[in-house]
Amino acid sequence: MPNMGIQRAFEALCKDAERGKACVVSLYANVSWYGGPEEGGWWGNDTVLDSYQRCSTQEQADQLKEKVEELAKLRTKEARRAWGEQCASELEWCDERMLDYDYLRETDGHNTFFVTVEQYPGKQEQQGDRQWS
Image (cartoon, rainbow, N blue to C red; front, side, top):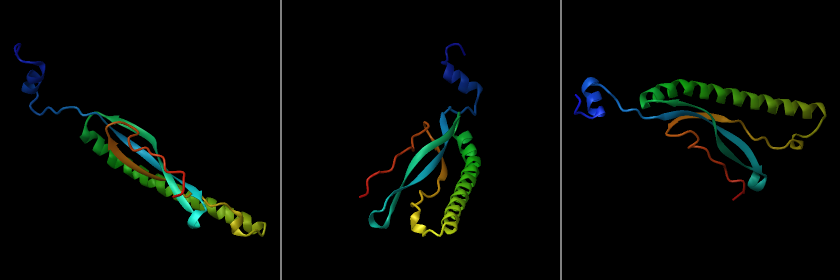
């Protein structure tokens, strides 16, 4: 084996060897926001990296992604519930003071979460257009 390159020597000893492919499992939040009153109101969203985990192989990343997707669904459900509770609380506040609901500003909406496997963390981040068009 001394004349073989290290890669070929490794492959000769390890018949099922796989090349490492570093990647990350990323959890993103779509952060909803109210843009303005034009045309009956418009909303936008920003996509923000929440957290990530580096993985050594694509297979490891794919397995982890499946588990994190359940977390993303749960966090989206919790965000939707919290947003609904906040809306209900604001309506009750208006009722207690006998104010019309138009006294309240538009809500931003609730965040949603998603998971992706990517080469480097933050690749999916983006900021929505802040100008109505």
